[in-house]
Image (cartoon, rainbow, N blue to C red; front, side):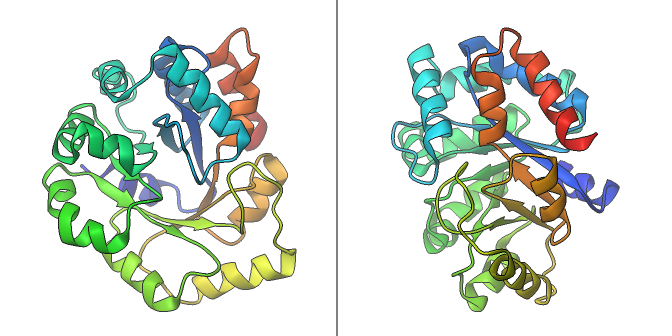
Length: 259
């Protein structure tokens, strides 16, 4: 079953992909927050695998990773938490996002096997080189039915974009501009539009989601004008930071974006 493809087939425009960090704000919050996000209407869920050196993440997600690691979160704990998730979240695509180092330490084959057994649909590893994926890891991912997602930036060459599109069986992650997650977008609006329109004109076969710098209803709606949907992470983490009831806060946040 390709839940990611099903999500895009069922909802052609305005898909909301939300990111939160596993084990944040408390170790046991992962599944309740995931269930709340799904019930509130999120179309795809990215679960962050906390890492001590998250190069692509801004200070908000970095801090959430620090807290989650201190809470005792690691890949083995996460897979244990997700073991029965498909009993309550049967259809919503779940992706794991993080960095290659913890995956290598866990063992790529073991990681893919455990992720698939937990009902995970895809993986986003921003520091996984495309050539290394093709040469070493693609057969492992395919064997376990895990679909990788690769990032495209305004600087990505057209030849690389088309290669990514050929290798992808999920969606294309369009980074909205320079910088890390959660920061103010430093791209001028006209420059952004030209970038998004250039990608759209390439007639790529995979759907597109825009991420980085999107945190409220207005920026979500603006991104959806140029792609099939958008990704929100840091703003959700902020909403969870001091919440007495993390699942309720997650639900309110999704409602604030979609309603």
